[in-house]
Image 1: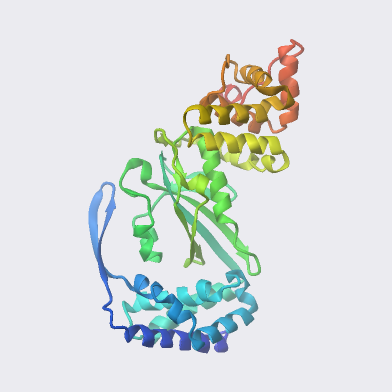
Image 2 (image 1 turned 180 degrees about the vertical axis):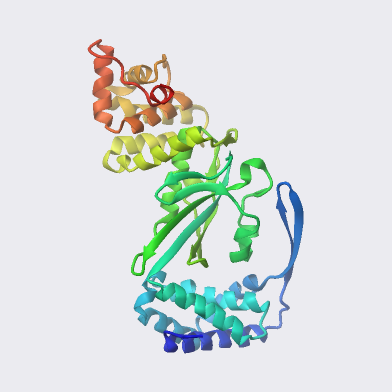
Length: 381
């Protein structure tokens, strides 16, 4: 194996050797798990697997404070190509490398080949110049006939059997209940991005949360992602992070199918969500509508009123917002219900300029012009 950073190779190898020595000297026996992997329409597969990761992670504090770990962490910090891994090299480099070696060995019987293979993968990530980043989160409450591209590297696709377990053996305990079995629990939400050598990893939690919001707006589905997302870099495990709470919580309601039409709408909405960064009232309307999905009774009604007022009422209040929404949606809106507010938010985002839309709706009510054509009317035409 050609080693590009001999000092890093030596220090990381010493760390792993020391960790193997400490872990193999433990009195506690290495536990095993008997797991089943179910897949719709296929036989159930069973796996007898040593719980190496759980065993190692339970002893992280002991390993982290060893001198060999401290020296290896210093060498990683000193390597300019390792900037992407952040300020905690033990968590982002040393521990994943150790876990990769221990899982390849199936325990704590040292194998030079296992370490060399894991280190070679690390160097490929460090010095490749371009890096393939991906984050994957389980998706519930939604089914799809095939891949649905949402834009800018974000897509909904079917989960491949065992894809998470291969890179993250502990993923079985982190997945939503019945994931991979029920028809509305067969998909993942994925972000893929090619990074330059000096690029930081994207904010996957934020980007996938925006994608969930766009899907909820487009489909009214009781969908959620998470509770965690799995990051990989150059097809190596990179990290496990929590999904933002608003996206990870599943609202009440029925599962829905993401068909091509609503998939295109979700993609267009996702591209327009940044408008809320420049328009605080639009941002407030979207936040209140999404929060209303998790409320009931008077609290929900209040959130919906405030959402519609922020969206179309402004200083004119909820009465004006209701009148404008009636013109916008082509139907009489007496009180802001959840579906009416959702569709009003969709139409407002699709028009792009909220202030111009409000002015056009007022002119339409005065008979000065035709009502602005809605997205769904334009799509049907």
